[in-house]
Image (cartoon, rainbow, N blue to C red; front, side, top):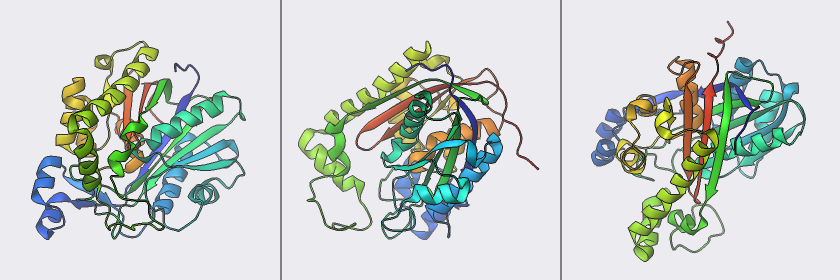
Length: 344
C-alpha cells in the first residue's frame, strides 16, 4: 500500500553489552565453522536485563527523541519471539506502565522475526483508520539465553543477540516518511520450524535448547530443499516488488537496504546474489557487531543509519524482513531531515 501521511518521529536501540565472536570460539561456545560462515565480529548480550526491561528502556529513549509523551500515544505494539522475563504475563502492559503510564491499547505480537514490520503494518492501519489523533509506540525485544536457546547453535549461520528497539510512528510529522508497505504470508512453510515432533503440554517438551536445524531437516527431507528455497525466495520477492511498485521505485534506486541481521553466508545466499544487493548499501558493518535481534533488526538498522548520520535527507531506505511461519515484509521510507540530537 502507498502512504502519504505516516511518519517516523523517533527510534532507539538498547544493547547492554557485546560478546566478541573470537572469545566465544576460544571458549568453545561457538563452533569455528559457525563463526566462519557468519563472519560476525560480536553479538549483543544482556548479562542481567530481561527482554521486557530492555524494551522499556528503548521505549523511553525513543519517546524522548520523538518529543512524544504518554498522553500522545494511542497504541503500543510489542513484537518478540522468546521468553520476556515472566510466565503467563502481558509484557506489553509492563512496557506501557514503565514508559507511557497511559490507558491506550497495549498488545503483544508474535510473528517471529517479521514482528517488527508486522507491528509497523498494523500500527499504520490503526492510525490511518482514525483511532485517535496521536502516535503509536512500537517496541521489540528478546534475550536469547540458556537453557532454552543456544545463541550460536540453535540456528547455525545466524548468531542470536539480546537487545531491544523502539520506534514512534505518527501522522503528526517526523524525520522520515513511510512511502509504502507490503506484507505476505505462506503457511505452507510453517513446518520448516516445527518439524515432525508431536505437540507437547509444556515448553521445551522435546529438547533443550531449541534446535531449528533438526526441524528444517525433517521438513526438507519430505519436500526437498529446493521446494523450501523456491517458496521462501518467492515470498520475499513478492513483498519487495509490491512495496517498491507502490513507491514507484526500483531496489537499485534505494540509497540504503536494511536486511535481517543474518550471518554473511546466509545474507549472500538469500539477498545479495538473488536480488543484486551491494553489501555496501546495507547495514552489514553494524549488524555484524550486533547479531540477530529477533523482530528488531529493521528498527535497529534504521536507527543506526539515522543516528550515525549515514542516511541523509533525501535518501530512500528499504526495510526488508522475514519470519518463520512464514511471513515477509518490506517498507520503503524517505529521510526528510536529520533527527534532532538527544536532549542534554
